[in-house]
Image 1 (cartoon, rainbow, N blue to C red):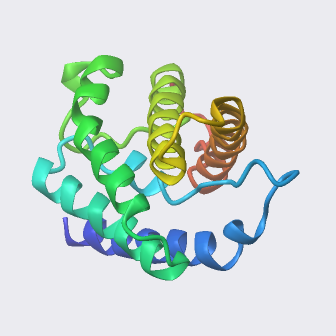
Image 2: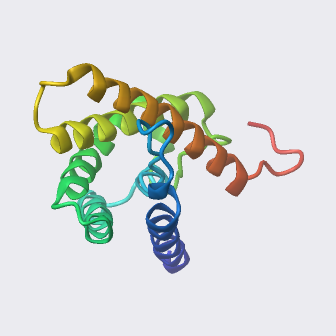
Length: 172
C-alpha cells in the first residue's frame, strides 16, 4: 500500500514538471496545447478514497496554477474532473473491478479509451471556458478544446502504453 502512495507522489511530481517545463511551451499552430497532468487522476486506483481524489485533483491543479501564473483556473477544472471521476468510472468499468484495479490501456482497453476521452474533454472544456469566460469567440474556443483534447488524448495513450508494457504471454 505504501508503495502505491510513493508511486503516486513520484508520478504527481514528474507529470507536473513535464507539463510546466516542456508541454506548456509547445503550442500547435497557436491553438492546441497538450495537457498531460490529468494522467495522474486517470491512473489512480478505482477504490481510492473520494476525498483523497478530490484533494489530489485540487493540489494538482493548484500546483499547475502556481507555476503557470493562472489564478485558479486549473485548480477549478481539475477539482471538478476529480469529483466526476467516480461516476464516470462506474459508467465505463465493471463494478467487480474495484479496489486495486488501475485503469489502463492494457487492463481494460475499450473502457479506458472512453473514460480518458470523456475526462480529458471535460477538463479542457472547463479549462478553456473558464479561461475565456465568454461565448463571444465560441468557434475559436471550441477549436482549442477539440485540438487540445485530441493531442492530449494521444499523448496519454502513448504514455500509458510506454509505461505499462504488456507482459509476455499475458492474456487480456
